[in-house]
Image 1: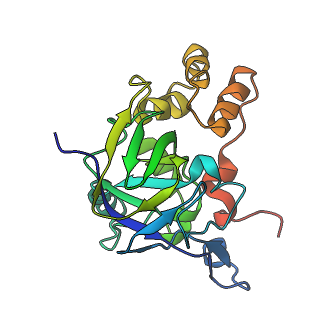
Image 2: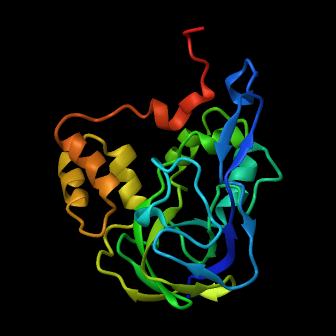
Amino acid sequence: MNAPFVYKLLTGKVKKMGDPQAKKPMDREWESAMFKQPIQEKVWLGKTNLTNDEVADTKAHGGPEKALFAYPIKHYAYWRKDLAIPSIGIGSFGENLAVKHMDEQTVCIGDTYQFGDAIIQVSQPRRPCWKPARRFRTIDFALRIQNSGLTGWYFRVLQVGYVSAETELELIERPYPNWTIARCNEVMYVHKNDLELARQLAECPYLASNWKRTLNKRLAGKESAMENRVYGPNKQDHRH
């Protein structure tokens, strides 16, 4: 078994793109920090982000529960084929860590790793939003990511420190081996009517609070619609 490995470390600033005057939603102005570039040198990992890394929508992204976004490199072959976009590859999803030898089937909520001088812990799967769809001009891309289960996941930072690319992640602790990222995604998107499963996942102490909130809403019978998250401003609004 190969140890989990951070192949590339990526950071990026918020960028404005598109045309404010555009008629079509996909051509309109938008902001994102998902266009990240690999960095070679050691970089400081704080409680909420890597130095010089930004998020555009601070309500939906960033914060201590989403300090680092990890994405398995091997998934890009699937997306190149699925979207018929040869250029899609490392950095395309706005990940901070492009990883090898780990994926949604093998990574669990609460997994705690030594990463350079820092210690990081898996907090939640990524819930895809409309921005990759805008970037790759594929209206249903968020749904495709969701349905494929190839979502990637987030880390929180337990101990700050310097980190760098080309680094093995050393697993220190795995308190919840039954809650793989894949299984969390299934509870969220596939077994939506299994309230017992939702209750069990919501009780996992290492699951990020926003996931707990969503699951508790489901348990209370108040599931919110996903239209806004997956399509956002990419869909034509009918008011004009």
